[in-house]
Length: 195
Image (cartoon, rainbow, N blue to C red):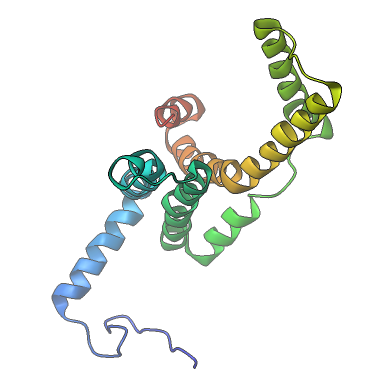
């Protein structure tokens, strides 16, 4: 079944929209276009936090243990990425949404920076843990398995399930728009408040 685009001034059933309905939709759209970051925050904070906190509050009344990682991923996608895509499409049009999506994946740095982020930082953290707590009292096989499963696999899963979309939301949308309006330093300070 093919759907037809809805003409301006009609509801999805093809009937003429009332003036009140047109004004309400218009007011909301105008507000979102003039305040895209506020519109994002109005969606993100109640929706994303409600989803993310479910595993913490569900055990008390329901006695159910929920996996935190699944809900964090859902909060990131439904509470962060979804409104960013909708607002970007509304404010910047289809071309703006295409540009936003293309900016998610390009390689902007040399391989050395990726090596630093993906290898040096985790190895430094591991070194600091050994200094702070001492070497683990496990066999070499167990240590290698823990590094492989605990560090590499969890890092990859976390990157693909949460971190990539969180950075797209906060750096690619909020930080980019604030930076264009207020400069790099003030935008960084404002964006950092969310953490």
